[in-house]
Image 1 (cartoon, rainbow, N blue to C red):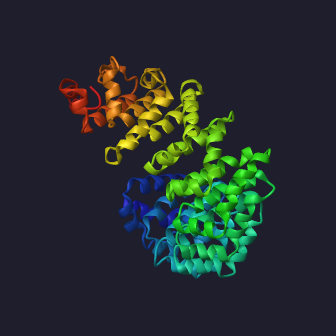
Image 2 (image 1 turned 180 degrees about the vertical axis):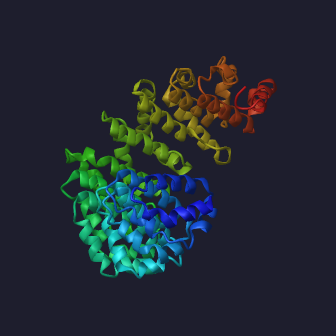
Image 3 (image 1 turned 120 degrees about the vertical axis):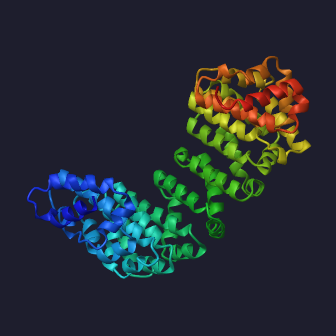
Length: 491
């Protein structure tokens, strides 16, 4: 096999119509393990194979891309940088997007290699071509270019090349092409900024960050919505959050939530503002964020009761994320009747909304009610029990009804709510006190799908693992639960 690959590579450019030979070469390179292929082709001249990309024959191009993709992947990045750099650079100018994508992906491998990247950093023209690929119409090419430049910026030399050389002008020129390309460059800048405070400093000093932040309050509401998504991504890192606070951006976004009341177009960007604060609350402190920016939680409550399904869905997701932590639960509890009204609306949505909204609602309820044994205190157990009661005076029956409906998503979501309360003594007492409920739990015939059977297994496992189950359920029922677990997920 290795001999045939060597022979075909050395002769393939001599054929007037090389399709058959390319098909044979494709079969050969795909049949041999990657490590052996690397040993076979290392040191061989690949110019002939690359030259066959200079054609208008679509089949020939496709075959060459598959073959080269396999061969180049088998070669060490340093070898590629030293021996295939010119061919890869030509590939970035090829008329076929699949060739551009191939070349770009290999450049991406090179920039990740500590030794090979030097070959790229010393080639300003190649880097300029990579930057121009960010502006390509084909998204797959642009994505590879963004990833390659982002990886390049993981080193100081890479940061210097991108942000402290003539390449900065090229990046800004590409950025000015149109709105779509501008946001691709912002995506790159946010990726780089998220790596470290030093990286963020480079991006801030280049002017990109301030330009992005300026778009938060621009006239175009769609651009504003996209800017908020980008800023939310920046806030995923601690140094990013600190920068946004220092620049007054968190205050500005809080004021945007307040100002949305009077903006008829706020529905385009308001969900993004709420998601921004939801992320902040989880990454830092729900109590601190909700106390410092009260407009956030007030808006979440309003959106939960909104007729707009987009707003309602975002509010449900945010409440679930907030309520997944002990601190978040306590923040919600402090709002008293306000949150109780929201819980009642959630109960209505769980019963009557469209299926997708019901699923989001049930998932949020699950997070709100979840309280692992190690976090349980008398006050917190009282909190989750009271919330469960607010949902319905017959909440267990309500969710059991959902868990028997012929909709797998709803079925599993309802079972997960039972799992959430299965390790809490009040939940276990409710299960025991509800006629037929324990029998329902251990009845394997009630699961219409593998997913629902798995969900029920997790419920029983949660009960078996709880330290209070044996006492509350009684010995006979507890042994039945343990027997269910011993039999496994399915029978």
